[in-house]
Amino acid sequence: MPHLPDVVLWSVPAFVLLTVVEMVSYRLRPDEEAAGYAAKDAATSVGMGLGSLVFDALWKIPIVAVYSAVYTLTPLRVPVLWWTLPLMLLAQDFFYYWSHRGHHVIRVLWACHVVHHSSEKFNFTTALRQPWTTWTVWPFYVPMIALGVHPAAVAFCSGTNLVYQFWVHTERVGKLPRPFEYVLNTPSHHRVHHASQGGYLDRNFGGILIIWDRVFGSFVPETERPVYGLTKNINTYNPLRVATHEYAAIARDVRAAGSWSERAGRVFRGPGWQPAGTGAPDTVKAPKAAETAAAKEPATKEPVA
Image 1 (cartoon, one colour):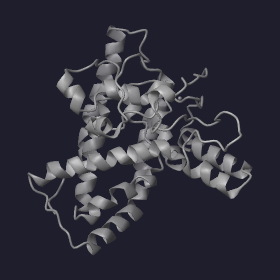
Image 2 (image 1 turned 120 degrees about the vertical axis):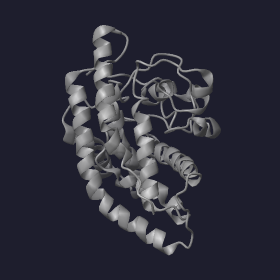
Image 3 (image 1 turned 120 degrees about the horizontal axis):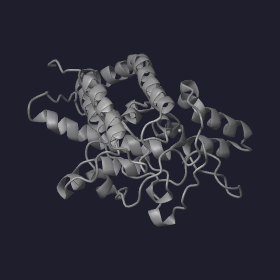
């Protein structure tokens, strides 16, 4: 197995530089309609990113053990060569799409991913607002390991995907030329993904490529200015609450449930799921990706992530 660089670590200086440039751009050329920056929000996002490094190191121990076991058991081997690496990146991006989509439509997975959507701002620091419970992600990449891709190669591809997505968290870049917008995940597509309007909810899950969304029916173009955050915002900058608030909400709902089927639904159904005969959803998420945009009701934005 050849040595593969830690692309996330090597990209940190670029992250810092781009963030400073974006901040300065808002000073020199303000946009009153853009979400822009807020000091407490940016500090929370950076804090969540630093915390994720610590927790990811802890989760990595059992995950690497499982991946290593699967890799040892499979007779298949995919060498890391100049022509196989792009195919690995393509496969990882495909499985990332399904991981990302799953983390929007299954509530216990959404409890992890909601952290990334909890800011009402959309800038480069939002890209750093990462969850502390990424133990829910690893099962989606087991097929790659079973097909003979070395765990280190999967980690490299995942890091590359994460680094790519940093630059799409901005309002300072408009729509790109049509060929780029058709194939790649761009700031325009990702602004839709972070929006809380009903027609934008649960759309544009792609990491590097947007073609998966076009193929699997989850693509929506940016037509109106997005409103960022959750359909019911958490109104806190406390990193511990940002990281755990949806797990706490699940625990409350399970405790109050009247049957085992309802308890299972509160955990494994969509974030906005309610048992038949109950009132409107009381969670931070609304309709699932499988619903059409036309069938969604616009989300109500609560005052003051």
